[in-house]
Image (cartoon, rainbow, N blue to C red; front, side, top):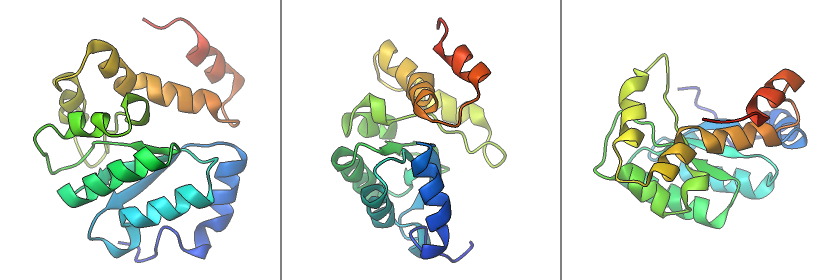
Length: 163
């Protein structure tokens, strides 16, 4: 809706900041929307390898999802988020089968979507229990622990025992 490409020069200061601090960056990726096509994410991930890019909606359409999967397989700093209003059969399993479970994580689009169906898509996916745990929190926990901006209290909490 902002009609500005995600890889436009206006975002460079924020991208340099995110890379300097290894801050995860969630970006809306939607195949067919000129400013946020998957190929633009690929350009950014190549230019800023220190940024963990979270591909919100992972391309959204079947073609976009396939393109995002290929990008994530080629670029380890791209993380796939299955949140979308469009639901494709076995889309979560398809994302996991692409780059692997350590590059897929839960997104909810809270405020726009009810989180329950988004969580349910992972909880009821045909995945091993340890893969579900990876997607439901472990991947994001690792991204946050790797970020340089995390307050000490949060770092301590995230580093503690998990159950």
